[in-house]
Image 1: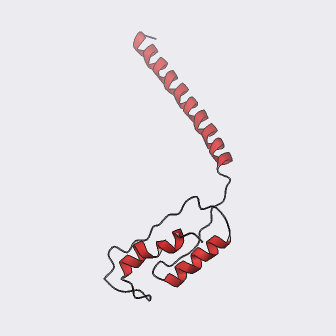
Image 2 (image 1 turned 90 degrees about the vertical axis):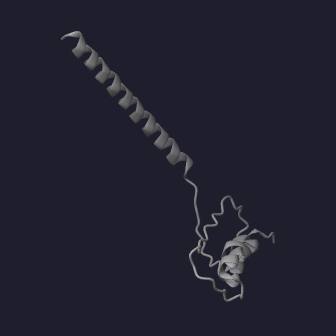
Image 3 (image 1 turned 180 degrees about the vertical axis):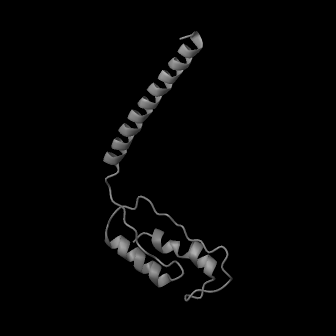
Length: 107
């Protein structure tokens, strides 16, 4: 072998070693993630265009006496035509702002 071939072989050997190390690290991280994520998640339905639905949701959640770690407020009606809810509030206002007070208000 000439020096060029030797250099290529060494580079391939280094790349192979890096891939092996990365594979081992990825496997260890995946095992660690699986151990740490054995919790539970619950999804509860709420219709933010209805104060009755929102109040029912808030009461049902508070009755469980569980801590609220994450609440994702993902209401989105940006392209809806202007209208009013059954509660006589402008739809965008009620869905994006007003009904959240029922969820955040302490008992």
